[in-house]
Image (cartoon, rainbow over all chains, first blue to last red; front, side, top):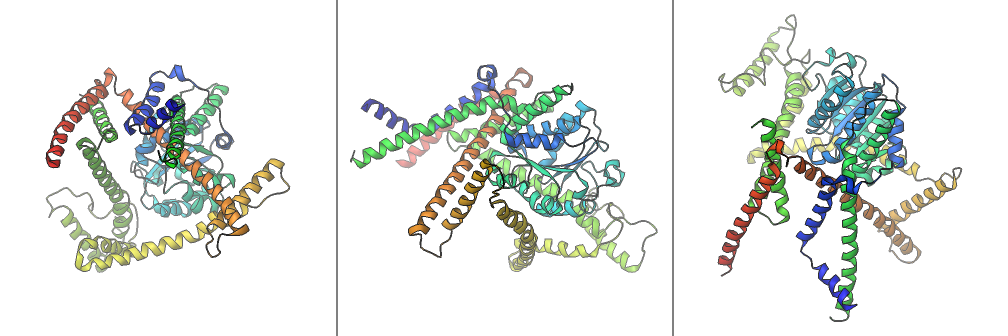
Amino acid sequence: MDTIKNLFIKLGSMDRRIIFLLVGLSVLFPLLKPDWFALPIRPKPHSQIVFNEINQLESGNKVLLSFEYGPSTKPEIHPMSVALLRHLFSKDIKVYATALWPDGNFMSTDAFDEVAPEYNKRKGVDFVNLGYKPGGEAVIKGIASDIKTLYTVDLDGTSLDEIPMMQNVNNVEDFDFVFSLSAGFPGSKEWVQYATDPKGIPMSTGCTSIQVTDIVPYVENGQIRGILAGMPGAAEYEELVKTELERRGLPVNLGKASGMMSAQSMAHVVIVILIIFGNITYYLTRNNKRKGG
Amino acid sequence: MSVEIFGSWIVVFLTLSIFSYLYDDNPFYKAAEHIFIGVSAGYWAVIAFWQQIQPNLFGRLWPKLEESADTSVLNSVWYSIYKVFNYISTGAGTLDRSVFPEGGIEGYDEIRLMYIIPFILGIFMLLRLVPKVGWLARWAIAYIVGMTAGLRFYSFLNSDILLQIKASAVDFTGEWGAIINGMIVFIGTITGLIYFFFSKEHKGSFGTLSKIGIYFLMIKFGASFGFAVMGRISLLIGRINQLKDYSSVEYNYATPIILLFIIVSLGIWSFMDGGKKNESAA
């Protein structure tokens, strides 16, 4: 028994770099050998609500897609953007993109470049990318009251008056749905506070894991309809879109999040084991100290 | 070497430089950190100028007017200021004009003098750099604080207070599961608020309720911690996945080569730096 106790106490003083290495390897192996660690992905209710909300939109409906993330949170949010665009374009829904973060321009451009050719969608006709405007919540407020005062041109410099799909769009009330792809401030919360709550427009969000506990109260209250929570949320949405496209006999392109979920699960297993070991070591060390050891 | 391959080598080098901090603080990490901050600040400044200040501020103050528009003396004086700005921004005419195009900025069809106020407040903000008149920046900050407070007041009150209070009410006409869930939310809300009520000593039944509030708060913090770990692991997966992609022959084995270079360099640096530390200790 003492040998085991001593082993745990020694583990407690393990160099932190070994822990980093263990976590790194737990991520690396499933990425190198995904077949060895394949785990099923089952959509959770919140992801299902998001999917249902988007799925009930009809051809020609208008969706405002806000890009509030950058390269630092791309692995979590970008797969959501791509899966969401596939879902929207497959239903011939008009997409209006905006960005509250400067890097959002790159993210939106990347996502449109990847998905639009798959569905033969044309800029200015099927989607428009309005780009970034500094100002945070003031920009949301501007979109809620008068888009054309805020934006005169799209990201490419084309005048909004020359873009056919901008003809009858003046403020947030002209959209059928708002979707916020958010990694922080300004993001989903601000969309709720300044646009969708005051104007009564349905809204969903895909956000980083770290934001989930802050956003969930709005989701439980119906102010936000469903939530895609971090990478697992993205993987679940990819799975739902894949099933839907297969059902409708449309070509299916696999998303990136599903392929990364094994690595996520393995890393969680390692971290949980390390937390358990850490707690055992803590109790053993504390008992030894009390005994004067 | 194509631009894509060159870009991938830069990505790999900067990613591994940042990861090298896990070993210890070192020159690779410091260089990557400084580059990140510098590039971010530069990019943000350029975007803010070209997407907001130039078209939305200068564009409203000096729009390109139709030829039949007002040609009064006041108008000419106003646009002569524009010409002065252009003269300065082009280095007395030696550079191409881009910020202030000929005749005005396209986008709006009338001069909006109201925008002189944000223009002046913006200049006040920059005056922080001049110690003697730095106090003028406070006016701009006061405006921002006041405007933000006013803007947030209604929306916060509606979305975060009134609607959330409404949501914490228990609907006894619903299903059993929903009623129990509603009760838990209600008890959690009330006891959580009691914990933050400091006007009464936390003793007796009040203390018990406060303690229950702590448990609810701890559950929230635990969930937040769990999600934070999940988020950080997702980001790690993103980086490792990209490093894996760039380790192929397509990218001239960027990852293994740069990894080896950084390890060897860190080994040498560690040896030399260790020597210096020993010298200083002696």
